[in-house]
Length: 93
Length: 398
Image 1 (cartoon, each protein chain N blue to C red):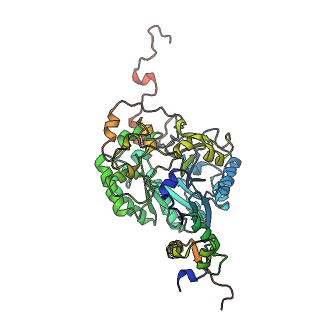
Image 2 (image 1 turned 30 degrees about the vertical axis):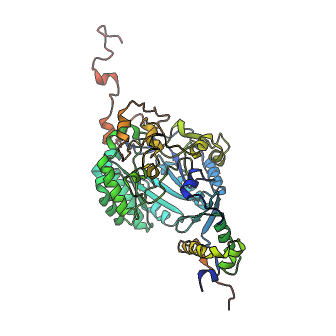
């Protein structure tokens, strides 16, 4: 199991502000700003909550398989900053 | 990713849809008369924005997703509606970090602040001892700030900021400032002295000497991960290794200032007509000014580097601080007056005209809070003070 096989979502304390380069993510709890440096990464982050796992969010955003590892690294960084959080599957077996 | 995105710094140089770091000076009124005040504060301006006008700005900031504002002044807590505006902003997803001299942070206020989310408090102190601090900020101001930090700590307010403007007199106290911050559970914040406002008159005497710039740089390299700097020391990056943070001038690109009467300036250190982008009341609101101002358009256009372009350190310091150059009468596309590669000093010795201030809210009648530094520079208040016979004529008529 890697991060890509798990369900994730945007942290409830975080707001995204679209910008030409991607988006600013502001965490209202720890007041940290994080930069999502590409529009595709923003699409991925927004898709996380609607997809069963992070890999599906990458696919839905059109990220080719060869780039999944790089995106996994980016998502890991966002998780460390609490921009995204693991989602507990409601009624998961 | 099909094409490599521009590095973030270059994206920022082209400007963002809304500022990241917005400073809002709520009033020019102040109970202190600091010798280096950026906004030449003292007296309230009769045109200052009303409560309703301030609320409208907060509504607009919420729509623009400006997630927090740095509120200052003057002393912002002097406004009778300050605490209301603070609650209003926080209630509209606009976090507030406010700067204060601490005079109104009573134990009761500290308790209330500790119970409010999204509020940061920044207490200004420009000396780690009363002697050094009060020289520039005025008698009693050290005790005032320390009492505020004590009240915040006693109320359980987490991590206030202890905000220090680095001067010739306090660069040697950096470790002491850190200990002072640690004592109150505060985070140390160090910023650069700018020759703006009353600082234009006192900069020659207060700005760190060249060897102190190096001392400051070395200290920041060693401790920079623990302190905040507002990225204000990027001119020091030309010593070699870049300091943490964004090493660029954010004026009009990611930074701007709203002043107490709603004028929008490119940065907090550039309150001058030359850097005035518009007015939130007269020019269709803050978003309109931020997005459409021709001044901001120019600041977001590619810069050539001018006289600095051939310097091998240009990529590190980007020519330094626009406001520092402007207020010392140096060309904006040349070296910073404190250029650490030594190009500032010849520029300062050459012919230059220091621009006249375009606003001054300093008190016309000084009070007992006036710092020693300004008292030393006091000019005679009347002709009589210069000559006891001024206006006297032998026949007894004036």
